[in-house]
Length: 420
Image 1 (spheres, rainbow, N blue to C red):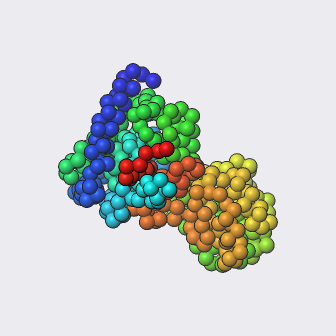
Image 2: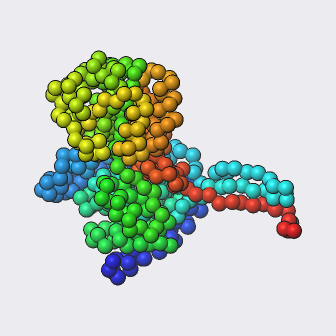
């Protein structure tokens, strides 16, 4: 890591630390005012945002980025409005700070409360999706945290402008704009500087592909909220409704193929496969999905390509779905344990016993019954927005919203006690 990169990060984190102290002690109304001002700016600056995004899209297409990558990178009027609306949804949430999580009195007479506090300075490293800039900054403002953002070079112009608008929202509310900063230099050494900034950055949140998350986990000297691959499973079990299963399968895979909540593997119980798989496959094929199945699935659907071992652990982020027949719920759960990434799994059935077992035994961050995996999203969970889906088991798991960006402290009230 170059001395310059370390010095740059030191300067950014010093400003962030000072600004975060102010932000964490600001009133809930003042933090909401910053979010409201930022939402207004997003709408007012729509033309400038689209212009910046067009520069990123043009460069991405010249670089030969995939259609799925371009989709994640692209902004339009609807997506800009969705970002603004997401900030307003965050405003409507209760204050995550100062919440009394628990309170009790001990025999000594001390009154002890556990109270929610901000985490501090949060580093967010992400790829391609410029809306993450707004979601992450908005959630950090709401929860009293300073954000240091490092977007991918592919979204450089879009993310830089969006970060500036978020900082301008803070300034409009009388708060330091240094609570939202973006690394506006594509030098990869600055990522290393973020990962090495122990004592300066309190937590790192990576949001991107396997290589990015792997690098963060390998190099970070700062605690990490891990977001691994989204190898999500849809299990069509005995007792499923065929029409509903087909509708959900198409939505789970094809609504947006490039997001982490998109289904990548369809498991179907062999007891119903002959009856149901051809119809489900027909709907997926008609929607433009490429199917890759095991031998039994291919026998039922001749249009299906043959899957190889690598397909079961693939995060396609594309209109491709692997299909496997299983002998029952136990084999389905075993498959998910072996090949899943701990993100999101859903069972489709009206059998309440199967649902109960699936929801209990599948140990992923999100488990569902009779719903599309594409609901794996903080906004859909009522969190306003999310920074990502944490697939680890420490501190935060599942959608990381404002409440998950808090820690706590113990507030102890005495009446002259001394310890014997």
